[in-house]
Length: 268
Image 1 (cartoon, rainbow, N blue to C red):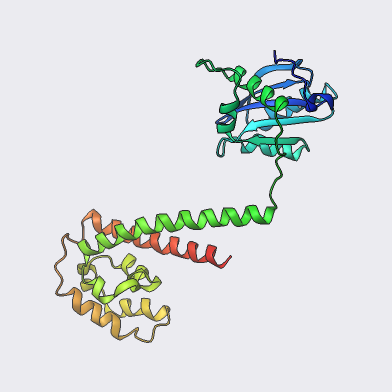
Image 2: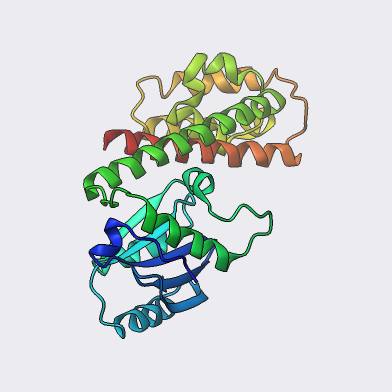
């Protein structure tokens, strides 16, 4: 049982729901401000049924001033944090480093139940700032920013792979689409459809021209002629039936899709 510690929180009857969070589940206990264990520590899954059952058990005590305390655990605490915020509880999310510094139990042996009581003791003997959920616009912008940088990082890796495959399948592409134009939408679409020099050599010139014409390029006639001319004299590292050729086609499509997604995120 939690030690009976006299504090300002006790005097105003702050009851504590302590939650030791893990991935997909948590250990919970409810303790009154006087140190009485109202709900013995038990495990709940992060599901609507378990959350609702826990809430029903809490409501049976008809308590006021119930505060919820948990440690920040990256993303794992987010479901249970959301549930109690949605149900109008006061929620305190603390830095786990602070919690370790303040633990009253210094034994190396660790149990989830003991961690729950450590959190209760921490709450009853210290003052924490109540968690305030940020404005939804801020959360959306933050999520948008994280997604943008994640996509950008993935795209950089794909581009490196794309360059290597181009060199193996039709190295002259880097001269035909100079600099960053090899990452342009038209270059990526063209290389997706014609990833190897021999494929271009066998293709009809009007088919090559149509792809540029659909994109509205003024050089839609001359550029494909030049590409076909260069392809006829190219000797790639692999033949047109090699699996590497289909890999280049796939990577070209992925780079194009990621770039479009990044451009969309950047607009917002």
